[in-house]
Amino acid sequence: MQRVYAEVRFAGHLVRLSLASNMEYRASFITQAVGMFINNGIYFVFWLLFFDRFKEIRGYQIEQIFLLFAIVALGYGLGHTFAGNAARLAWLIAQGRLDYYLTLPRPVLPHLLFSYMEPSAAGDLTCGLVWYVFTGRFDALSILLFLVCSVLAAVIFMSFRALSGCLSFFIGNASRWSSFLSNTLLTFSLYPMGLFQGVIRLILFTLVPAAFVGAVPVEVVETHSLTLLGGIAGAAAVSVVVLVLVFRLGLRRYESGSALNVNI
Amino acid sequence: MPVVSLNNLHKTFAVKRKTPGLKGSLKALVRAEYQTVEAVKGISLELDEGELLAFIGPNGAGKSTTIKMLTGILYPTGGEAQVLGYIPWQQRRQLSYHIGSIFGQKPQLWYHLPPGDTFDLFAHIYELDRAAFERRKAFLVEALGIGDWLDTPVRKLSLGQRMRCEIAASLLHSPRILFLDEPTIGLDVVAKQQLRAAIQTLHDEDNLTIFLTSHDAGDVESLCKRVIVINHGQVIFDDRTSALKRRFLRRKVIGVRFGQPVPDDFSVREATVLKRGTWGVKIELDTHVRPVDDLIAALMAYAPVVDLTVEDPPMEEIIRQIYLADDAVTVEVVPD
Image: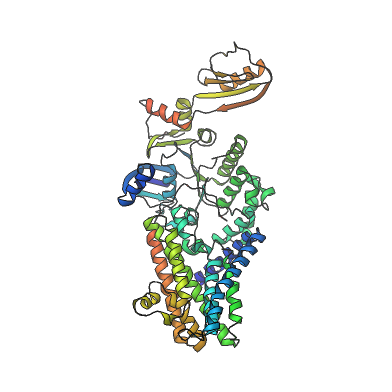
């Protein structure tokens, strides 16, 4: 337990350092975050137009869509802001840039993931909080469940992105694959699960766990179901375990490289 | 008791082969061909505590691959290695508390932040006691002369300044062995000399074992008592540096620029003029025939000297000479 606490403190230190590094270019950081916020806002206009004509879609009204977007955006934003290297892992592996982490006495994976902060993801994070305001759910339990679900969604988003990045260990540069798979997860998570049936639905609860970062958390916040919350926590735990196992396996195939490296 | 021992260490890589151009790319897409490249072919060596070893060779000789296996970054294909009793690729984390490493092309300092911030991070990484960390930092700052740059973002430091800060970062946890992979790469002459002096000081102060790779013969001459030369992944020379100097670092090329024009009939005793310009000359010298200082004294007496450089032969030439000398290939280390 003491070891876990030490690693969490270390991750906190890395996050502070990454933030300080980003703050060296404050204008760039803020404009990227604001740009993403506006981008997300424009995307949501589609749903506003939709609900102007229709009352609901598969049981979702505008309030549920706000809640869905709030959880997905906050989860995605948290995962990619604080563990920014998850999105760059495929590239880092392909370029042989893990040497620095491998020579230091800290668990490689968390050290690596928390060593970079993606400024634009701060815009997603902010969007998530703003969208939640529009759900009108201001009771303490709903807010608490919203936050817990978002954190668990962040773990799943981060693990899935990093896991897809691990493909680089096995097939060479998998940056585009990683990006494609991550976008698939994100896209499917932004729709009511009632739209999907059969095999697709099965995939969205397993291989591409979009249900656990979108629809299921919405149900948790709405119904206050601790059973479903346990399900999301289980999905997050499985994602992390699979990531750790695949990363360890891949590390044996790591080939380093001679590219110039810079820690930013 | 050696602190580093390698026994028949091997490392092979599968390298994709393709003929140039689009046709080659399409062919490789349908059916990729791989060639097995042996980067390290059965290297065996031992290194004692406090030794300062130069591990040199031309680009692609296998220096970095060897150092990466010794620091646990790469798994070997075959053979054995122990560093301080640990098997690096199996006990990487335990080992990393006792070794420091610097890869010339892979900085550890955070680029946009001052070195002091990375030093703090390293104190967390190695879980150093705060007071002990501050004492060690103060010692290294003094020894390396980096006090003025601790609060300057790394991106604003020169390469030489940055490399000295890199060394400080690697030694904060008081390692017993320091692996230096091409630390002088890209540095100018002055920065190289300053860095070599700093490495020497730290070696003497801490009885630090240093494993230094370089393709610059100057690093070896000024720092190390023992040198191992590798080429194509194999050890081709393992002996005292004095032996290498005596036999293969005899030739020097001296470039001199005078404060007055050079006459057409310019010549020097017991040396060869390789090139003559209006203001300067390039002279090749065999140091066994005539000492460098004697020639420099003669040049300075001849006319006012504006600029002067002394160059070692490139590593490729040293390797060529080792191969040419029938009796040169030796892996026996003669104690000093």
